[in-house]
Image (cartoon, rainbow, N blue to C red; front, side, top):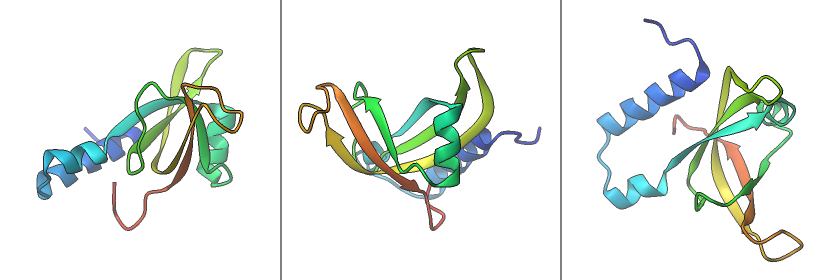
Length: 117
């Protein structure tokens, strides 16, 4: 069966990468992938490259090097569109300072390049 969504393609790419390369448990943990709902209005900014950050509740322990699979979500219909964008975390600003509420974070994000998932 052919892959139909960018989420399926990216997931397959990660599985193939893990199968081809050897990792220590520490390296795998550093490249954790988080699947996140992203409302359409914000998803479009990410897809175009204009939005290079994410404000999130930090209930997942985000770290530099993590991957985000940002899945377009329609909150009024409570469903995914099937579109997804993969980004890597390049910076984490923890809450509790600079006016950012404790328990939240701002993630600097960038496109995944050079064939890296």
